[in-house]
Length: 62
Image (cartoon, rainbow, N blue to C red; front, side, top):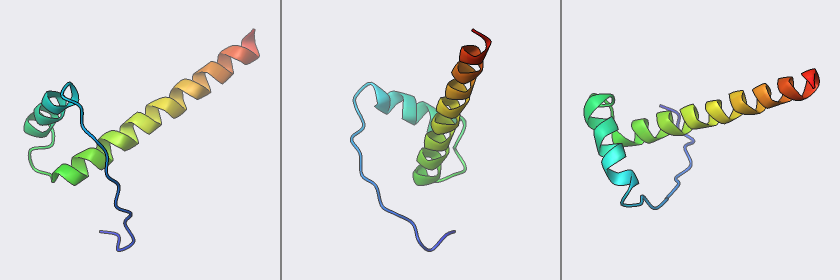
């Protein structure tokens, strides 16, 4: 694991809590909660990048 990690704190809403618990139980059962959060954040950021790239392609076609 990298030695230069940055600690980040955030609030989990009541709506997010069961979603995270379900993901931990079903998909991340063999990993730490921190690993799960990192993976989910990266997946979300990748999705945003893909969406932005798709929108750029659509603008070029127009």
